Figure 1 (cartoon, protein in one colour):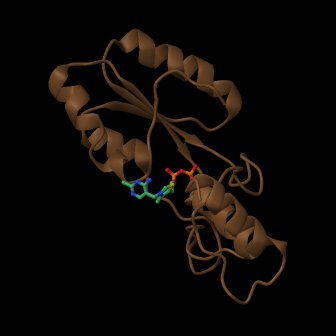
Figure 2 (cartoon, protein in one colour; figure 1 turned 30 degrees about the vertical axis):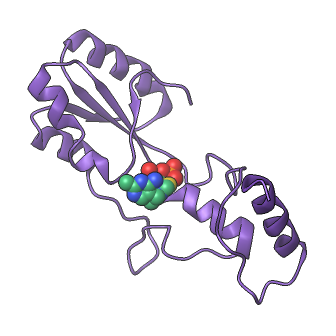
Length: 147
Ligand SMILES: Cc1ncc(C[n+]2csc(CCOP(=O)(O)OP(=O)(O)O)c2C)c(N)n1
């Protein structure tokens, strides 16, 4: 999904709104909240067929997430969580019209980007994986390193 504003990662959201408030810069933060580190999960899956620690869930398996809109409000930034795709555009318009920093949390499906993100990951393939992924890793790493 292409949205105006800035794509921010989970950790920096803990401080990202601050400079925009201090500077009075009307940055709109769109937080695509997929309750996990899906790019890392994709790398894990691609290279090991498994994943660990990258889907944030309660003990009962339901997705866990902090409340990013509440976090935005704690910075003094007008914040919304959109409940459905149709609400996104009007919410973006409200944010733009406010002329002030704003945050919009967009619940996002964990699989929105597909089972893994294409690209080169410099994760060594575990030795117990003996299929073509080992060869691919060493080949693509050699390319990256100009070996
Ligand atoms: C400051 C920092 N710490 C750690 C990483 C390693 N890292 C790369 S992607 C990623 C997960 C990103 O998760 P999120 O921003 O929620 O995006 P998603 O992959 O779920 O789309 C991490 C931890 C990084 N790039 N930068």
